[in-house]
Amino acid sequence: MAKPTPVPPAAGCTLAIKAIPGAPRTEVCGWLGDAVKVKIHAPPLEGRANEALTEFLADELDLPRRAVSLVRGDTARQKVVRIDGLALDEVKRRLGL
Image (cartoon, rainbow, N blue to C red; front, side, top):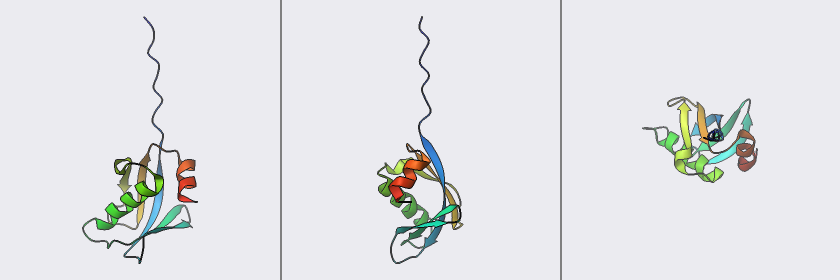
């Protein structure tokens, strides 16, 4: 009986975000220390800014929305997002960082 071939773990990474809700438009602004500064058009009410952030990142990274999730920072500006399907260097490249 042949041994099953081990399946490599799916590529994925976490990314520190400094979110600025209520901005005139949603955009990636560059690095702010170890975090990526992202301005979010949505207000920080009832999780709208968090939802807008994950949707924006998924669109920018050309990933399905379920591939980007908030790990930490529900009510804080300092957030950590999990990105499934891409390594950190590819995330940086796609965001133009």
